[in-house]
Image 1 (spheres, rainbow, N blue to C red):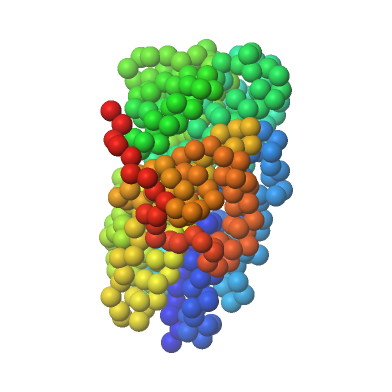
Image 2 (image 1 turned 90 degrees about the vertical axis):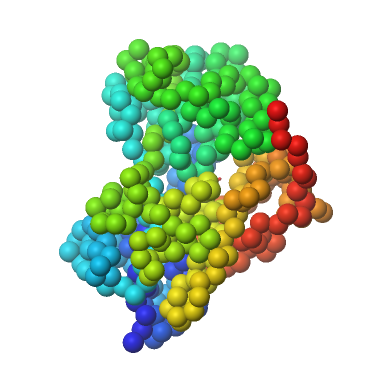
Length: 416
Ligand SMILES: Cc1cc2nc3c(=O)[nH]c(=O)nc-3n(C[C@H](O)[C@H](O)[C@H](O)COP(=O)(O)OP(=O)(O)OC[C@H]3O[C@@H](n4cnc5c(N)ncnc54)[C@H](O)[C@@H]3O)c2cc1C
């Protein structure tokens, strides 16, 4: 009998896994079913550019089904719950999907309702997020009409997907208002719950310096208790206030709601406890997870999802053949960080190695690490093409290995 593989989520991780597994098995060997609640696949890194008029929604949204190779079944429905004890998924449309292997790739859910006042007065009028398509489009109109004042960029709390995206937003805002000849009319402030601009010490130091250089005020250790849209104030639990005329927020993130409804599948935030090296869930041996839906201790990012997909494809094949799993995923992550004026930084790291300066992908590589360059910016733009044409179809990307290479990385002293 053919193996039954069910993949929940048809975003970055689900699509890539389905296509990779289809290459490994023909239709007689395995049925592959992908479930998603809608048929709009968003290239999410493109959302950063929409508010500044640098990308069109038409270019970053495509039908999900078209990204799946032939021989993969697509079901458009909400997942209602997973019944681990019976190896079944129940869909909201009443369908029951039995599985031999389940892959969870349902990402995160934005939870603006979890922060007091965030969806109150001013929401979508002078309080916006660019983390979804409607928000990015509304913010584009708001920025166009902004004639000066206090623009505050805030992430409410970690974890968030692409933790550098709000920083990139602040850098691009600096560039955008400069190019419009009105930077002197805009006070830019970056407000974060972290103790620096970023989570990792060396990168954090560099990014803080860049914020200072661009005259973007950095407010740290700010735990948002309330958004007061009426008075235009961010209020922290320890009663500090940051005033704003326009607030760009990244709301709290949690796992998909069905994870909590499925007995023994998720943790208290709705993420799936997952072995960080094999990507097997802690819940059941035949349940695996990748991408933003897991609790593995590395950034929630498309690059992580991509590198995990390599290791996980191999482990699904091993599992179905009754072989030992490989502990192949090392936490590899990399990310271009737009810094405005046609430049970007690049960071590359894993569970053990924090982002360090040097060259990428090797010592002689063309891309500088943790340093602004035009080539990094072009790399970021080119990535959109690679996403649709190589990453999602499940092809290897030349020169980019799923395991992090130490080559090209300089050893840095710990900052004091
Ligand atoms: C503004 C922004 C910029 C970013 N920039 C970068 C970047 O530069 N580099 C980078 O590496 N990463 C970046 N990312 C992060 C990256 O997009 C995600 O980490 C990546 O898409 C995660 O893949 P995933 O498969 O886990 O989740 P997703 O691609 O989000 O897919 C999850 C899927 O699950 C579906 N789903 C959820 N719940 C249900 C349900 N109950 N029933 C059915 N279907 C469901 C959703 O509809 C969705 O299609 C960015 C993200 C944002 C928002």
